Structures are given as C-alpha cells and as structure tokens.
Length: 466
Ligand code: PFF
View 1 (tube, protein in one colour):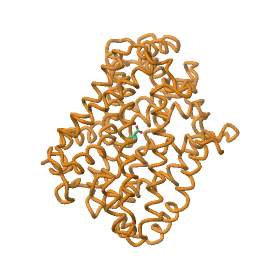
View 2 (cartoon, protein in one colour):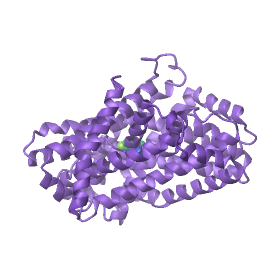
View 3 (tube, rainbow, N blue to C red):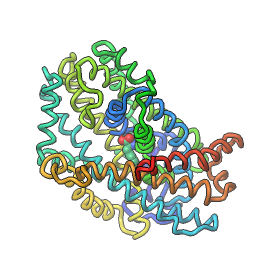
View 4 (spheres, protein in one colour):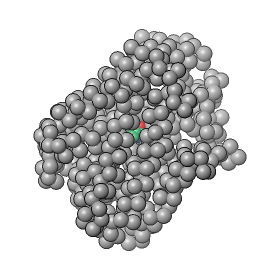
C-alpha cells in the first residue's frame, strides 16, 4: 500500500465495518490534499467568479470572506471532528456520537441527508465538468483563435444546445469519478491531488499574469476588492453564505467522510484553516484571472453560469501558446472537479458498504446507475427540456437551488446544532483536541451561536421572511 493513502479496508473493495478495518490516511498532508481537492473545484473557478459578477463585486467578496471565517471554518472543524470521533460513514458516525452523549440515534438522519445532498450535487456537477471536458479538444484544435465576446458566447451556446455531446461528456466525467472511487483512490486520487493541484495553482498564476498585462487589471481589482456596500443586497449576503458552504464542501457529509479516515494526533483546527486558506486563494486568483478579461473585452460581469466558458477562450485565442495553455487550463479544471466529485460520492459509497455490507464495487455500480440517470436530467435542461420548468427553473436549476440553498444549509444547521447543543462539551473538546482552552472557547461560541444564526438567516430568506 502506498504512503499517504486510505488504507486497505475502505478501498479494497470489501465492506468495511469496524473502525480498525476501514483504515486511516497515513499523514496529515494526505488529508490536507484530499480535503483541499474536495474544496477546490468548480465552485472556485466556475461559480465564485460568476456569482461575484452577478452580485456586484467587492462588497460581496468581503461578505463571502466573513462567512468563510465565522461560519465555514468552524463548521468544517465540526464536520471533520464528528467524522474522526465516529470513525464511520456520516450517518453512522453521527448516530454513534449521539448515543455516546445519551441522545437519540435518530440524529443519523442528519448524516443521511448530507449523503443524499452530495449525491444530488454530483449529478449536476458532472454536467458542468463535462463542459470543461468538451472545451479540451476545442482548445487543442485552435477553436478559440480569433474569438470575440459574441462568437465565444455563440460557441458556448452551441455546446449547450447539443444534448448528445453534453451527455457523452457528463457520462465520461461520471465514469472517471466512479472508476477512481471504485478502484484507484490510493494511487489515482492521491497522485492526482499531489501533482495536479499545485499545477492548477501555477496555471492560475500564469493566467493572472496574462490578465494583468493584457486585461483591464485595475478595473477588475477595483471590482473585486473595492467594497461598495450600496450594491449589497440581502440576497447577495445569503448567496455568499450558501457559497461558503459549497466551496468548503460543507453540509453534505464529504468532510465527515474524509475526517473519518484522519489519524488521531492530527490538529483538526490547523488543517481546516489551511484547507480554507488554499480554497480561498484559488477562488480569488480565479477572479483575478477572469475579470480583467471580462472588462477588457467589454463583456458583462453579471453574465451568469457561462462566464468562464465565454471569457477565458477569448484570452486563450489571443495569447502566445494559447492552445497549450487552454488545454492545460480545462484539463486542470477537470481534475479540480474530479477530486471534488470523488468526495461527493464518498459518503454514499461508505454508507452503502458499511450499512448493507456490500462490496465497494457493487456500491459504486448501484449509485453510478442512479447518478447517470439523474445527470441526464441536467443535460436535457439546457436543450430538450429547456422549456420544462418548475417555478421558472429548469431541472438543473432546481437541483442546484435545492442542494445549495436548502439541503446544504439544512445539513450544516443540523451539524452545528448537534455539535453545539446535543453533544457534551467535554466530549467535543476531547475529540477536537485543539490545545488552547481560549481557542476552544472561541470556536465553541461560534458553533453554538454565530454559525446557527447565520444559517437560520439563509432559511428565513428562502421562505421569504427576510
Ligand atoms: N467544494 C466543491 C467546489 O467548490 O467545487 C464542491 C463540493 C464538493 C461541494 C464536495 C460539496 C462536496 F461535498
């Protein structure tokens, strides 16, 4: 078995049931890479720039950073702590801890909802990752040369209008995810994150460098960092909060599942902080790579989900070696998406194997079939079923809305309430093992009061009360 891997029990294809047989990450570095791989994904490079654009820039970014600090990091620590203390899939880990604190094992429902949320997100996540896949050959064949704002928009529109191409791309991404999850996490995932995450970082720096010299960098930096609070709406605050959940992979069991393989001595607080820092750095760099090009090409920053797929090809079409950089960029985006997709499936796969004692392969096949069918729904949302809407939203939009705005915050709320108000403080303090009483006290206060309050605000907005 390789170093830095999840040991045999969890990934060798047998049903792992006891804590001992399911194995551990062999180092803190391995956990850091896997958790960062989960956090850094389409959310950072695709979603963060476009929602920042839609919500007016700087003030939104500031609120988002505040949400990461006050809500995201404390919750990330809580999720990893629950996973490690329970040493099981999210639903059983929550049930085990509840019983230890004399509470009802029905709390397992919280973990279960998390797994379901991850499952639903994965079904549309592979569709967006499929867009990146479709852009790899387009970049390689020089298809971006000479694009301007209009023709780039038309290219993306043509992709969305092609159900077969979208379905093939999404299916390939799903297949790659399931293959890695089923057979090759030790070699596949860990190698991928070890080499390709730094690669992604370097590429983003190159793109920021390009944008700084060729784009409207000053305008973009002002857009991203000069906070004009008059532009900030209530909805923007809640979107920022929802995105803090999405980008740190919270509220859907992924970090609990990864935490369940974390060795006892590792500092949860420090590692969580580093994961959040890396995640935030990638999002801000993506903003600094994209907005200069948006402004320089007279594009609309609030263009929505197509933003990076329309703006970056223009830059790739103009820059020296743009064909190579374009291919690398979309491959890296795919890798970032894959390492997140894997973590989205892990809670369900771990639950199926541990709960029903079926092999990992069977669990992968079962969930893969269901995921594939669901993903087709998202594919058709952009073409065949584009007219078929519910409350004005397509199937894809419904899934995104339901998971990001409803299920993730609900899962997060259940987790913070469970940690701060159901579990015994002494048990939590032991499990977190933060070292400094004052730091623990600050975290405990955030978890009991600030984090739940923030999440409740999301819900009040959702049901139209605020
Ligand atoms: N954090 C990922 C991103 O920003 O793209 C998305 C994600 C992964 C959400 C894993 C939830 C999750 F469990």
